[in-house]
Image (tube, rainbow, N blue to C red; front, side, top):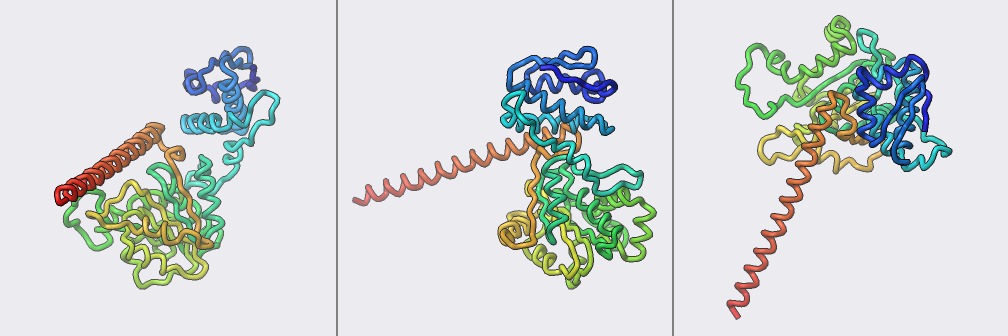
Length: 352
C-alpha cells in the first residue's frame, strides 16, 4: 500500500531524525519506505491497515498546523491498534478520526495564548461530563490531566460569567512524610499543600489576573477544613486529591454545594496518604453515589497520561505490579482458608 504525504509535512509526521517513523515501524511490525512524496507500507495486512489508519490521521493533523509530538504519536498508535479490526481492507470505510475531532475542541487558552484541549478520548469524555453534569468525579493516575482540565473549565466558566467565583480545595495531608511544624501564619502553613493549584492558576489565568481576582474574593484556594459550615452558591468548586479525604470530610464537602454551582472531584485511588486503615472518602462516595442523576463519573487510565512518555510506562508498570500482588494475596488467602478447614477436619476426626 502507498500513502501520499503532502509536501512539507513529512518532517512533522516522521519526526526529527525519523524518530516517529521508527516508532510506527516498531509498533506495527512494518516497514515505511518514503520516496518522492509518497510512502510505501510493507508488512502484514493487519499492520498495513493499522499504519494506513495512523498516517491518515497524522496527515490531517499536520495539514491543520498541529505539531506532532511524542505524546500524539504514542496515543495515535494505540488508537490505530484499536481501530484495526474496523478496517479489514483498503476499500472499507475508515473509522472516524478522533485525533482530528479532539484538536477542534479548545477549552480555554493559557496566559500566553496556548490552547488547552483534551488530548485523549478519556479526557474528551471527562470534559464532556463536566459540561453536562452538576457533579463530576474524575478518577485516574498521575499525569492524566484531571485537575488541569477541571481548572481550565472552571476559569472558562468564570470568564463567561457562568459562575461568580472559583473555589479550589484539597485536604492538607502529608504525602508519606512528617513535615513537623511549619513557620508562619495559618495560610503560610497550608500553602505548600495547595501549591499545585496555584501553579495551574498562574499558568492558565496569569499571575496578575489571578492575584487581582483573589484579592476580590472571586478566586479562593483553601484547605478542605475551611469548607465546613459554608454554603457554596454560584461557584465552580474543585476538590483535588480527594482520595485523601475521610468519609466524614467527603460528606461534609458534598453537602456544602448550593444553587448554580458546578463541582469536580478529582483523585487517584492508588496514591492514598491516609493513616493506617482509614477508609477513603472517595472510595465510599463512588459506591454510595452511583446511579444518582446529574452526577458523572470519568475514569481515566494509563492511556490518558499526557506527561512524558516515561510517566505512562511507570503508571502501567505499577498497575501490573499491583494486579500481580493482589492475585498473590488472594491465593495466599485461599491457601490459608484451605489449611484452616483442613485443621478443623483433622480435629473433628480425632474426636471421633
